Length: 248
Image (cartoon, rainbow, N blue to C red; front, side):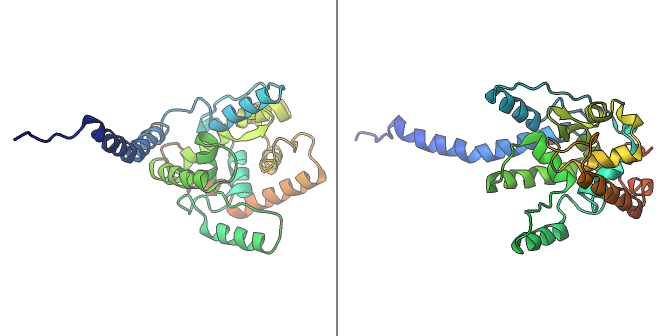
């Protein structure tokens, strides 16, 4: 009796399906290794930097990207606190997601106010470092996964260190060192508390607002950030951030 055989081509869909099912696992494993490695290795750039460069080429106005990494100990405490006060006052307490801020933002937006986000510094690091701009459920889902990994593998000090070295502070200006030189002509380590507050004040819209020539609104926002910094406890707040980097 002839032995039945299965045509070889029938195994192809099953093999392809198996590979497709394995793909999310490989992507998850790769993202874990990448985030874990950046606990110690300084990122050479960010996805946002690549995006801005590509945008400038398509607009026929190529820009020069400026960024110079500065380790935790060379970043001024005034700027660390100003950014926390402006962007994420519960940074020391949350695990990547500020649920109270999210609920407040949703309520504000439902009432018809200007659209307000509630991204923590950890979420902003995940987005700026690895992802693209825009609003979509896919991007938010990946951002949530990467945020969880960052909070799991990095210290709070490392998260803030990476944030301050990757944040956008002007057209082609990335990181605190480039921001200080661009806006004030000084090194980041020489920033005064007022200059730090002004830099933090323009973070929501750094390509349209100026820290060196602030509008009345930016001036008032900087005053508010300075008050919030004092209310948070100033340098004492930084002592609450865990990690291998000693606070200055």
